[in-house]
Length: 57
Length: 551
Image 1 (cartoon, chains in turn orange, green):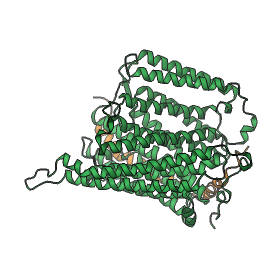
Image 2 (cartoon, rainbow over the protein chains, first blue to last red):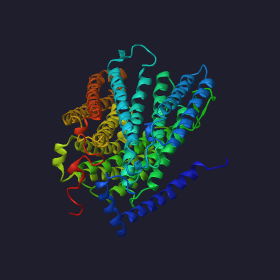
Image 3 (spheres, chains in turn cyan, blue):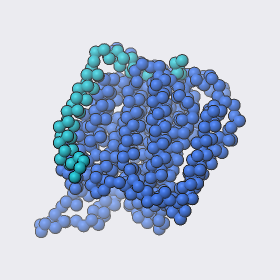
Image 4 (spheres, each protein chain N blue to C red):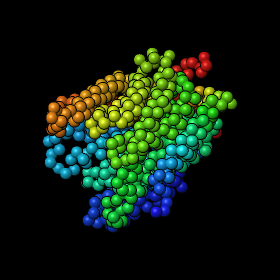
C-alpha cells in the first residue's frame, strides 16, 4: 500500500500538529502585545467611530 | 438597481444573465424526465429575469463620477430586505414544523410537506437565506466604512447578492421536490454547489479588492472575521461537496467519501458552518455595530485579536465532537472534545469584550432597544458557547446527544445570538441607509425586542426540559436490567414541551413580522420637508464617542 498510512498521519498530527499550533499562538501573542503596534490598534478602534462622511479620496 | 451600473457594467451584466439563462436551458434539456428539469427551467427563468431587468433600465442615465465620493449602499439595502423576507419565510416554516412535531396531522398528507422536506427549508432559509443575506449586506457596509473606500465596482455586489439568492432558491425548491444530498446544512445538489462556488469566489475577490483600496492603514478587526467567514466557508463547501453526479442529466450525485470518513468530513463541515458562518461573520457584525451604536470604541482591541486567532485555530478541530461513541477513532473524538473545551476561552473573550464595552453605557442599553438587541446577543453568545463546550464533553454528550437538548443549544445560539445581533444591526442600518432620523416606530422596536426575548426563553427552556427528560428516560433501567421506558413513552413525555416550543417560536416569528412591518414603514418615502440632510450621520450624538479611549 502506497501513500500515507493512518499511523503516519496520527504521528504527524500528534507531534508537528502540536508544535505548529503553539508556534502560531506565540506569533499571535507577540503581534498583539508588540509595543509598536499599540498606536495602530488605538487608532483603529477609535477611527470607526466617525466613518460616515464617505470614502477618503 | 440598473441605474447604479455604468454602461459597460450593464453590458457585462447582460452577458452574465444570458449565460445563466443558456446554462439553465442546457440543464433542463439534459435533465429531461429528471428532477433536474424543473431546476433547469428555474435557472433559465432567473437568467431571463436578469436580462429583462437590465434591458428595462438599460436607457436610464449612467451614474456620474460624483458617485465615487460616497459609499455604495444600494446593494446593502436590497440585502437587508432579502434577509427579512427569508426570515419571514424560514421562521414561518420553522414554526410550522414545530407544530408538526406536536400535531403530526398538520401536513395535509402531501409528499412535499413531510417533516424531512420542510425542516431543511427552515434551516437553509434561516442560516443561508436570513443569516447569509444579513452577512453579505453588513459586510458590504462594514468593509466600505472601515476601509474608507467605496466598493471597487457596481456590478460585483449585485452579482454576489443575486447569485447567492439564486442558490438559496434552488436549495429550498429542491427540498420540496425531494432533491437532497442528505448532508445536514449541505443538502443542495452538485449543480447548485457549483454555482455557489462561483458566487463565493466573486464575493471573496470583491472583499479583497475593497480592502486593497482602503485608506485606513490598519484593517479593522471586523474585516478579519468577515474574511475568515468567507475563506473558510469556501474551503468547507468545496471539500464537503466533492461528489460525482450520476450524469450531467441527473440531479443525484454520490459523495466521494465513504463510511466514517464521510461522517467526519460532514461534521468537520457542519460544525465549522456554525463556527465560521454563524460565529466568525457574526462577530464581525458585533465588533462593528455594537461600538457604533453604543458610541464607545471596543473595550479592548487586543482582546479582539487574540479572540480572533483563538477562534480560527480552535474551531476547525472541534467537528468530531458530533461523532462521540461512533466508529470514529477514539483519539479523534477526544481531540474534538479537547478543542471544544479550549474554545470557551476565545468565545468568552469576545462576549466579555462586548459586555465590557457597554460597561458605563448601561443607561443607553436601558433606553435603546436596538442596543439592547446587541447586548442580549452578546449574553446569549456567551451562554451558548459555554453550553457548547460542556455538551462536547463525551460523558455529557452521552446524555444530551440525539435529544432535544441539542435543539435547545442550537436555538440559544441562533435565536438568542445570531438573530438578535442581526436585528440590532438592521435597526441601526435602516434609518441610516434610508436617511431617516429614526425607525418608523421606536415602540414597535421595543415590542419586537420583548417578543424575541420571550420567544427565545420559552423555546430554549422547553427544549432543555424536553431534552434532559428524554435523555434520562432513554437510559433508565428497571430491576431486571431492561430499559424502563419505550421510545413512545418518551414521545408522550415530550408532547407538552413541543407545544411550548412551538408557542415560543410563534412569539419569535410574530416579533420578526412586527420588525418587518416597521422596516417597511421606515422605507416609505417621506415628504421632502421632513427629510434629514443627505449623507450626514443621522444618529446625532450617538455617532460620537462619549468618552475618548484612555479617559
